[in-house]
Length: 79
Image 1 (cartoon, rainbow, N blue to C red):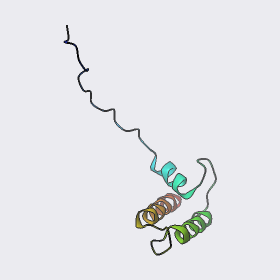
Image 2: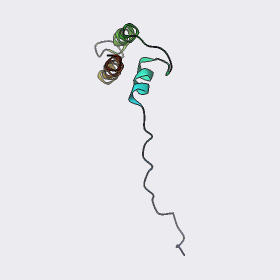
Image 3: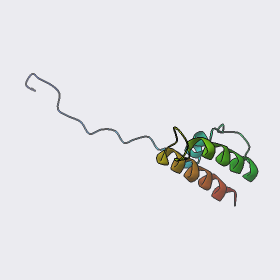
Image 4: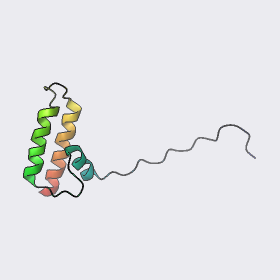
């Protein structure tokens, strides 16, 4: 019999596996099943760069890096 009190700690479950390409689509604002072309990805990358560039008001280095990394991942998959 276990003594009264809080239950023993358990190991946290592993984080869910995330498909990097689905995550990249989400960062760039594309739907998971939306057909993509190199041109559309590059246009979206450019538009988001205008918003999130660190030199812009409200921009950030981390957000810009996410945009660039996501676009590069999608473009690499198309090559």
